[in-house]
Image (tube, rainbow, N blue to C red; front, side, top):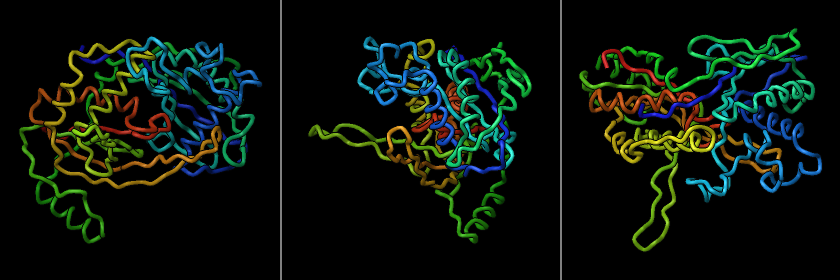
Length: 371
């Protein structure tokens, strides 16, 4: 298999508020991430260490908070040695990313993905959610009860906890690469050319413009639509000029190139595997990006969302903006499609781009019928 054999756990967590409340959707993932992180640290960290950095702590290598929320490369790391921290081995998926996950005044349902060795921290995270339910969530610290925790697996869900139970079961199944690749692609109907032109005219009358006019498509070539469900922030174009001056990467605010998407997914997956799973021995990392550059955009409808989050731990504000919408890509042939698209299925699980642990970079792919 060209792609690594990953091991991950995706949980659906359903809660019920003790009194009716609403947390705005755009900030919900950040509220969850901040509350879970702070509460977990208070559970596992000695009180005298709460205001100190994690790595100097003698318990850091065995600490659930440090390894999940503040991971750093070990001294003998073969990659990312100069990075202060690593990609977080988790993703909090807010309500709305999946049809059955909702946020209402009565309750909240969201998902949590744990990658590789981060799965070992599951008991700590469940204890954290229980403690957080007592302490309360959001600005008004509204308490909640956990109604259900279940695994999300292509073969079916497994209930780990239900309201009224005094125990939590450990998962018996985990999501692997083979599980993800066994899922058939959702399909999209191919619109006739005249229908696409009519749609463009209607959008224009409404004052909505596509990022680029739809280009003619070849019915013999595979096409794939990527839906960017939560803000996607990608950067590209960094380098060194001839005079040695560094060129800073630029944000991609529209028409995300397929080559950039594949490179960022490749790098994120490689890092997660190296530090939290089994190392990915890809025959040629550079070739994946070069091959992806041959994939072209036939249509793109995206918009840029500007968002910020406030860190309770540092007191600083951070931008978590990105593009949302959808873009259709055409592949030069079926062989290229078959080589590159498995990475997208893994990407639907681990997300892509900056701020992925906060639920950003969530995407969903669908193949066009006949493609």
